[in-house]
Length: 601
Image (cartoon, rainbow, N blue to C red; front, side, top):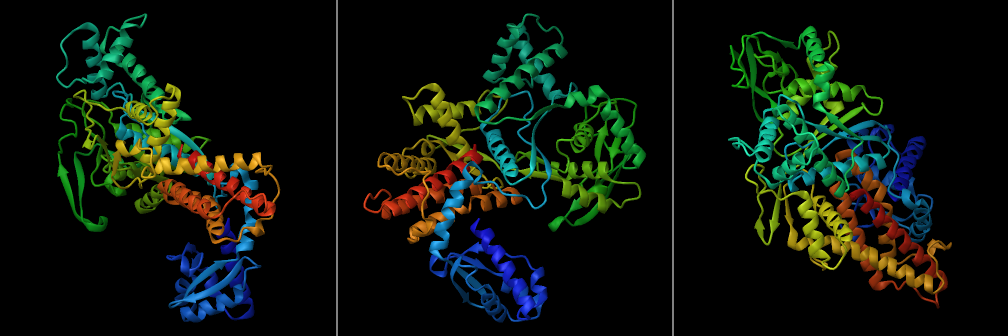
């Protein structure tokens, strides 16, 4: 809110200067950014417009800054001072009384405090987690669940229409799913365990559930269908426990059953982006994504060595659209690949009424190779007759974004806890939630322990940017001290609630009118600034997917509130008007914390 008002004031100053002939018209073409100063002594905010616009305006940055300062004035009472620093940086100091008067506006927004209005609202489909139905939700996937659900909610709060989706990789021809089904079958029937079988305790759980079914499966296909359904139910339950819900659970197999996969592949052949010619192109990529060498492999071996048959391999010529090699759509024996399913799946998502402007696909750290191939799939789908490949690829980059989150190293008792799928040593997300809850609140009811475990786990997953590796320290996560960021932030919320309760006992209610201009202490102004920053942080996180900023915001708001609390006594019966204003400020701070906590899940 404050930044928006300041940006509007600078924009008005530019137009005023242009009209008066003191500011070149070209300055209006530059973007205006209101940022924090690096040091509090330099003011409350900074604007670098003079630095970025001087060259295009053909003037000196310092001279332009002076002209902007004159045109800006006090921004209708919002500023107490405008100062020029260095070669042309503009530092802005808030008028404490004007900032204080904004407190009532912040409070009036209530639960909408975090919301902002998107300049160009989009219908966005966010697909995340999408774990194969042959295993549970692990702590590694937990990071994707926390990140994806918070990103989806952040995009919605920033003004977009968002659809949350889980893609079920349940194709009947999947070798992994057959191995999983045979593993379950061996536990149910007591037969020989498959060489590449799955051995985790969760497989035994599924087997026990199969035994309890009124009609027992007989064939491998029956076991595959039953085990998949049971595993998906388990995944649903664990994600719901973690505060993650989806609008759609989409089955890959449904695409094959409807016949659209074969139809879409035929269309790609008609468009000339897929063919059966017996060669594959590979690109040797250099730094910066530049192509160093184009390699043509004549009579290439199919990607799947187990594929046998007299048919021809069908290739998607994905190198035309920036992929590092052409991809197999159909093997020699007629079996279709995951890429073939991806073609139909992405077309389906684009064509749905609930969201096709933009697709965001969130993948784990071992999926970097999927970025190029998925872009190529979308480019091939979107390419119009006669349209250059580069144009189609540009549109694909605009409408599909593949986001990769990095590894989590889970530290338990100071030692890394490995995550593996086939040796039984799996530490599941449900185990993490349970252990945190039990250790943090050993005397609490199980439901409360689950809530605590979920909240702490989600916060820790989201404390670092998704594109950096994360160490998850369980011992710190359950520590009841200021060293634990979650405890520190929750203590600020509890402290505010306690203050407001005591104020109410003294007759000062949080919803009573007050004079915000009395909030002139530096600690009060700092707190108002931070509360008002929430919608700005939401907008930034929506733009670059840096939802870790919301966790940082919570910690910083808690710190600033604690500092305010240390020096600004809230309830002062001898100062009733100041008390009313500070009670209102505390209520606004609680709204800020709650708004950010809600986004974090």
